[in-house]
Image (cartoon, rainbow, N blue to C red):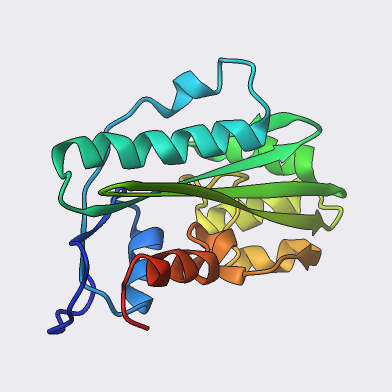
Length: 200
């Protein structure tokens, strides 16, 4: 993935994810990269009683570390996103009924999307967290079902796709970087990679 350009990169760049959303975002930066699935159990971290932000940071770092163990010559980017309201974590729904149930619970109030990133390279490890607050409109069950059937957000934490029809569900969104909502905050990530020697 990414554009194959004759760039002088400090390390091969690896995305510890096969998410098409994160892959498309990282490709925007123009540095060539590989995408490797870390193959970890994401649900385990959610049973440890950690705060939602700690869960996201732990999973992002674990993903990067697992891939880095096999590619210690590389700079590995791990990322994880947690949707949370009132301390509860909303995982990827997986099916229509679970998506409808999540949206009914989130309807009419605020929730947070916490997007954590870990960057692990030879002699360096760094994590950061992007916080987005989303205010959802009050939604009827019929409106929610129609939305789920249209967008099929079954692989998205919180059960919506902001880059598609999901934007209609919200009254207001507070964020510093719109790419964080999709799954990879490119502004902070670019700052970190430039510090490591990647060319602007």
